[in-house]
Amino acid sequence: MLTQHYSAQQRRALNQIWTAAGQYGFDPLFMALRSDGTPDIYMNCIVGCVRKWYGADMPRALFGAWAEDRRQAMLDDLAWLALENAVFQRELPERPILAEARRAHAEDFFAGEYQLSRQEWMAKNQLVYTMQAARWKSVLGQRPPVMTPWERNLSDALRCGGELDGAALAGAIRNAFAQSGLFDGTARSKTALHLHFDGKWASAMTKFLPTEIVHTDMLTVGHSSAAGAGGGPKLDVRRAKLRLNENAETDRQYIESCFGRSLYPPEELAAAEQQLCTGSHLGCHLWFTAGAPDPEHARSGDSRRLTEEATVQARRNREAFNRDSSLHQNAILRLTEQIRSCIQVHSQTETETARSGRLDSPRAWRAAVLEDRQVFLRDISAHRPGFSVDLLLDASSSRLHCQEAIAAQGYILAESLQRCSIPVRVTSFCSLRGYTVLRVLEGFADKNGSEKIFNYFASGWNRDGLALRAAGDLLRSAPEERHLLLLLTDASPNDSHRIPPDGKHPFGCDYGDRAAVEDTAREVRSLRRKSARVAAVFMGEDMSVPSAEEIYGKNLARIRSMDQLAGAAGALIRREIQDLSD
Image (cartoon, rainbow, N blue to C red):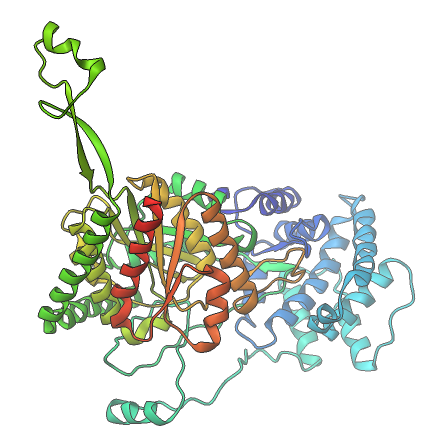
């Protein structure tokens, strides 16, 4: 395993678990972290002791029994109360100090009560809290809380003894849940009413009924010209105290199958994640790639089918561009001329040595001594732009309806910049399974690489804050000191991977709405402090305009349709040229 994928606090928790288990190098199913992100040493010791006494298979099968159940988080918490009692009794003879640690944990539980706001109290599961309060009051020798007979019976059933072996302990927990009516062995997820229409019915119904883009953690390539529906596994939202450690290797292989190999070797990628995936992005991963989905090397049937769909979308992008080729070529000519004229108007005068012009007195001696006739100066106009451009394209599911237009406009913009000798890189970004993927469609060194922009496709989520942070890391390879980072965005960052607990969000929160907007705005300000110029072309709902203005400030251009992208981006670039000349 690569411990670099863990934060410093997670590595502390990992070492606590390994020490208690007496085994090293395994990925634990759960880690215990407090609401501020620091490790809970007692519960991590319990997690390790579960591994020591019952192995890996029993807890994995136990928690897997109710995976995807609508009450999964509650069942997880209650199961850990049962496991805690059993392993405490088993471990105590070998580790007497555990009794003191247990009592300290109980005191911390009640001390934390007085630091919770009303909203945080409302977020707690009342049954879980009652069961935890009953357990820790008994540890402290206090009277139990007021409980109904049903709650008292459940609390007693969760006091599993240390004499039980693994199978008996798992059976006792499942029996306690069954007797209490909490879980009968069948996982039940929340279901919604879905009506599925195909063909003409789908086309007709979307004109009269509201539709929505569904984000999932499975790569699903939809096509702009066809009605479709997306689906996938429900988000596993576990509470902040004990969190599932995702199967990192399986996810990494899936991402590589869908997007191509990483630009960075594993060691460099792990180092980049350790540096960038911090704060609100703790536990996230990055994937930098210049590849394209390859059906021949897909590791599974799902990834093979999906990479084939990406290939189909690339063909659709090219066909759509070619259908209006003359229109697009005219757009390239107009935009090139506008940018070139702006460069010429704001170009600075430079001086070079010549055989005629104004005499350069300090060099006059060279004519007699060295027979060098280059002793004169003359003025020339410098038309070198002096800056480079990174075009960052939102490739989340919210762009499914306009993929062909985005590809065409991206090509127009990149081709125009190249003709004006402005270095340009085009990158798409989306998020999937906790990975924020930056896919370089055209690099600075690609002389004839604009064709690759037609490989653009949209899928997944958009964790804008982490994408901007990662894009800032890519700026180190820019060929010019001055740089413009230009985004195509709807100013609605949204991701399946939650923001971990911190001082502002003690229980963590979803990456969306205010929290995500504030995070994205912070990353924009951070890039600007590093002398990168950040601007955005906004195409989104009216309700997202305040968010766009908060994130990007005055460096923002709004468009109503995707065919206005190249023109709006061109206007921002011309403004950049003017600012540089000033």
